[in-house]
Amino acid sequence: MTMFNTTKVITGGKKIKLQGSLPGERVAKGELLSIPVVADDGKHRKNIVLTKKIGAGGEGSVFETNVGDASDYVAKIYLREKLTDIKCAKLELMIAKGIECKGVCFPVALIKNENDETVGFLMPRAKGYELGKSVFLPKLLQVRFPKWTRKDTIQLCLTILHKIKYLNDRGIILGDINGQNILVVSPTEVYFVDCDSYQIGSYPCPAGTAHFTPPEAQGRSYETFLRTQAMENFAIATLLFMIMLPGKSPYSAVGGADPAENIRQGSFPYESDDNSKVPPGKWGFIWSHMSFNTRKAFVGTFRRGGDYFEPEKRMNADGWIEVFEKYWYGIDHMLDNDPMAMDLFPTRLKMRECKKCGKRYIPKPDRHVSLCDECYGYSTEGRREFHEKWLKEVWKSYPCKNPMCHNNVTLYNRDQSRYLNKRLPEYCQTCWQESHEEERRELAREKWLGEVWKSYPCKNPKCHNTITLYNRDQIRYQSRRLPEYCQECWQDEPCKKCGYVAAKWMHDERDGLCRRCYEEEQREKRLMQQSAANQSSASKAGRRSTFSPTSSRNQGRAAAPGINHRSAPVRPAAKWSDSQTPARQKVRQTRRKTRDNVVNTQQGSGGFSQCRDAIIVCFSLLFMLYLIASCIGSVN
Image (tube, rainbow, N blue to C red; front, side):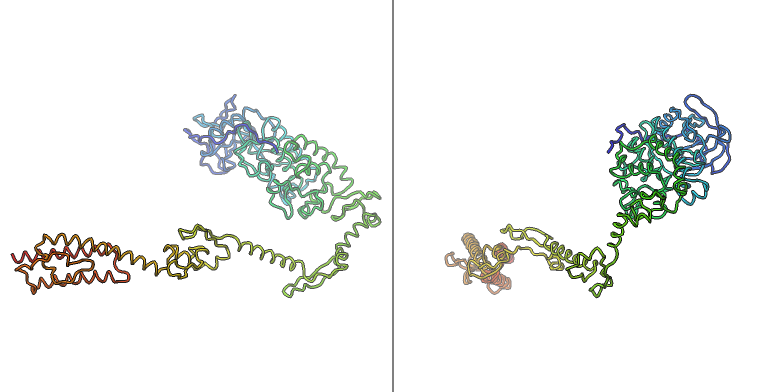
């Protein structure tokens, strides 16, 4: 595979902001005008006039000028958004080449406005029918050139080849070769248009067509690389093929991929073993009537492994000129051997000469031996081909055993030896394939069901296993919560204290105990902590009562749990104390409720937490002190 041209590509460029006017910017097609401009070829400057707008395209508009007789030269004026400094530099380089080839509409001078700004170029005028809208369409070809024969298409190829050779020899690559850029007047008069897009120097051709693009450049952006001569040679060969087989791409095949993919694979349908991929109809007949050397050159160029398939081996314009000149000089001799040799669209295959008797005959598509019908029947090849034909004939045909199938089981003569000592098949090929396909699908489903669906760690912090779910579990957990514990954590395990059996993860969360034993153990711990807290608070209250004038009020009352009132000193009640006053009754009720709450806390199954018990005791003591202080204040 050839390497790309490594020369730096010059593309893009900055847009030019015109200070002056753009000639003919708002002129309608066909409108007469008189706009003065300047034509500059680098050596001479000449004032010319744009006289009529004759066309418009995606890059600009074309105008007739007063240069030459009958407007032999036209001017192409670019659109404002298409004017760049790179494009102007490329035009200057092209004009400096001094290309003078009849029929090649190459830029010959720059067109400048009143401010001496480049706005387009001057070129020879073209005429004729587009190749893609005449020769490439069989019906239009017969309408526009009704007198053409095979010799005229050969001459057309030679005319185009000579012009391409002239440009290639001067370092100019056409690049975008296609049926829209060539106009045809006659087999000897053609015009190349859109020449400002040609590749010259480091300026690439920014356009292209997939049918004319070689395998090594398929799928690439044309603006990003410079075409090589090998790429140009592929486009030349494709153009010649589409002229000889009007409009048919060389890689257009029956049952194949699209032409672009066939180009990459080098899949050329003609001259194959069975010709089954040759497009039906006239295309195979046209191919057979071409000369042997021409067919050989096309096969070697387009088929992978051919003599000219590799980029560096492709024939250039010189090579194809030699092939088509031989074809042109030999067409008269071919006409002597076959009266359809000159026809553009023959209706049968090319006649051959019988190897045995020398008589000319029309070959049959399925016969590969060069023998006429009479000689073929008596030859070894004829008997062999007759036997091959007999082998393809039907031997037996009967309905398929499957009641839901309406096909027939068809056996051919070639199957007789196979089923000589074997039972005939009962099912047709379709049912047989479907049964095996069902088995394959079942095996594939079993394999899929065994594949991992989800995998995540077990929720038990003391377990380091992973929970693995498979595709077969998807339906099971479609509307259910996914398991949080692994299979090992769900194994039964007895409690360390009472022997109660439960899941392992439940015991692991409670240090190996069941729920009941764990709660009892926690309750005992809380009681012990509460008892220690009560003793500590009682000892502190005893020390305060030694110096308190109201400590005698504790006489005659039940001791709070965990507090030994007998050990505390008892003082006589104050003279001002009255046990029957409403305030005193309220104090007694409050203390009674507090004592009951403390008792319930110690005897309850769950109880309050240690922190809450301490808060209640402190709150009760503060409330008692508040009431005592209020009573003392009322007495005073």
